[in-house]
Image 1 (tube, rainbow, N blue to C red):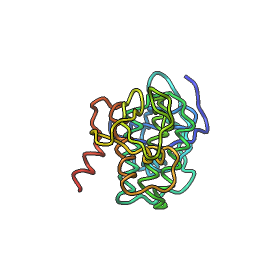
Image 2 (image 1 turned 30 degrees about the vertical axis):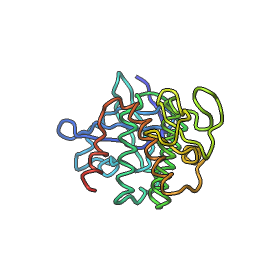
Image 3 (image 1 turned 120 degrees about the vertical axis):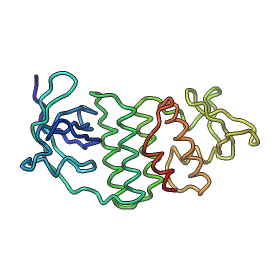
Length: 233
C-alpha cells in the first residue's frame, strides 16, 4: 500500500456504497482515472460531505491496495464553474466519455488540462459547440485514434477546402464525388482541426465527424447523456 499526495483531480462519477460511504471515480492529473472508496463521506459529520460532487476542482490523497483505493484527504482548490442547461449537459457528456473510453491508471496530463479547459469554457458560455468539439478531438488524440485532418488517408494528398471526403474511422478521409452519401466538405474538416470561425453547416459536419469517430470507439455502447439530450428535444 502506498500513499499518493497532492493530486489535483475532478470527480467524474459517484454512487452510494454501504450505509455512509461513496464509490467515486476521479480523473487525476498524474494518474488518470482512479477508483476510490470514500468511507463515511455521506455521514452528517463528514468533512467531505459537500465535496463529492462532479465539476469541483479538488486536491486529493489516497491509499492504494488493489483495484480500488481509499480516499484519505479531499480539499476544494477553486470555485465550481457555473454549469446550467446545455452547458451542464455538455459537462455530463464529457464525464461519461471519460468514464467509458479511458481505462484506470493511465496518466493523461494533456487530456486532464483539456478537461479543465472545457469546464472553464462551459462555465463562461464561450461557444459550447466549439469547446466540446475541441475536447472530443483531444480525447481522440489521447486515445491515439484521431485521423489525419490535413491529408487524405490513402494518397497522402492535402485535404482541399473545396474537396469532398468520406470518413473511414480506422483510416481517415478519402476524396469522393460530392454527390456520394455521407460526404464531408474539406473546409469543414480543416476547420475542425484548425479551429476558428466556421459556417453553421460546417459546424454541423464537424459534430457529425467527431460523433462517427467516437461511436467507432464506443463499439455499440450507449451514452446515457445522449439519450437524455434526445429526450429533451
